[in-house]
Length: 357
Image (cartoon, rainbow, N blue to C red):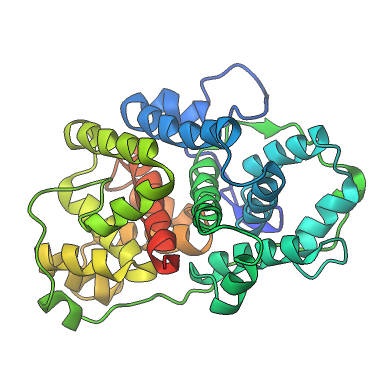
């Protein structure tokens, strides 16, 4: 089946996971149930991480809900995250937002509806989408309205919705209830697709100066500065990540070499450079294969397919049908389900470290 188009983005033409649920239409916020049912030990723990961030945003908000919704809607729109888009369209209705608001979300920061604060937030979301980096001009503009803690929350939340798009595009649960007003659906605006294929591509010289890590890390980064930065806003969530790491070490189906290849490929594309350097020092042969890319002479067919999948997740937020077919020759569905949130997690680390300070 050929690839479909939703929100102006291509999506898989066929579902990657069988939907064990009896409904044809997916209720709001139910999309994560399908991957959890397929791989409870990993996806269940990862879902606890995501839900913890959502619940803290409600119970102890760092950003006002209006700002959070701007980030969620624009971020989901940019990367074709149809499921989170529909969820937050419903939230917009609850907050009494009309079709004009959703049309302005699609048009972006230049829409006439926004004040300077809202336009600055939307500009930051777009810059994060393109470069994992908020420009200095936009940062200074934002800090006129946000505290440093709120600014950290902005880029962390923006990165989180891009990971959610990757996971949900991998395993759609069925047809969606469409809560979007007709006037908004008819907007000619289109998402920013695909994300620019402009990898960071750190040079091998950085590998020689790095100190190899002392032990295996999967979800927890080797660089302690990343964990410390992440814990500034979310110490409880950082603890959950450490718990996921313990579960992953025992329960992940994907082998350690394949895990490291996928992580290093995403680090090579978006950073953070410090984490790339530490992992490269521990795995120089894998780092050389990653730097050469899927068409490099040393990559096996399995490694080439896995690197192509990471590249597609970084730019298109889903794995194409052709790459999926090749991956299935080498990996099980559970192994591939593990790849998506794993590499997405390191994209969040890149957003945190690229924008700190």
